[in-house]
Length: 262
Image (cartoon, rainbow, N blue to C red; front, side, top):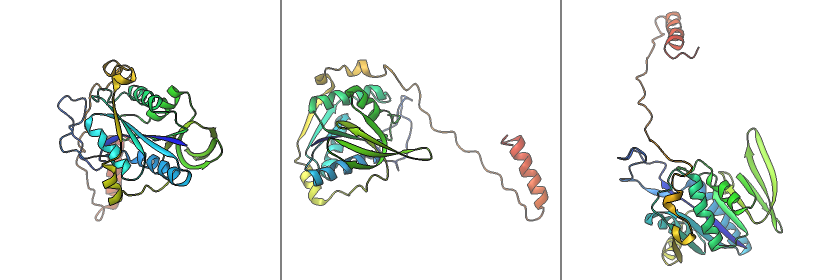
């Protein structure tokens, strides 16, 4: 079995985000980059298949030079090879452009029996990249999966839907986007971290895939402006100890006239 995992390098969710000088992206100064948290479930599921079924695991990522580090962090947990599609990051914010690049990389590195990706990248992908890659590859896709049972040439996936779960059986090859609850991602070991430095990574340019990164970027979606939420106004404290009825009446007035919620 050959398994591919699409991974992305994103700002640490604990980072303080600032708007960059262009006003269309973030200021990357001092940002710590990590594997997208949802991708960690995809990585873990692939490693479990390697351990239980002898699957060959390939990690694929797209981005600037620093993104090669995400492959090393994946290798520290397990895996066999990596593909880094090196680009300028011009496709930032355009999920379809990113999907086209990743789908082309999968075709070049494949064929694969199964593909995993996080349900969303915690970045600018709008939770669309996994589904788009599957559509471009013309294979089935099951989103937001929290449980998988593997069969002979097919799998059964449990996915979250509003108010319950949906059980879907799909033939392989297919693409699964992973969600919290599917597994418990492992931590890298010291042995794994040392071994990861020697693991093979193939670096290809977007042009090597027959694509024009500049032409793809912003063709279907582009960021016009980025801004932080407005600062919160100071709160009001109503002292109801002396006059609870008056405080209640004042609260009702504020909710009606200022907050306009009643």
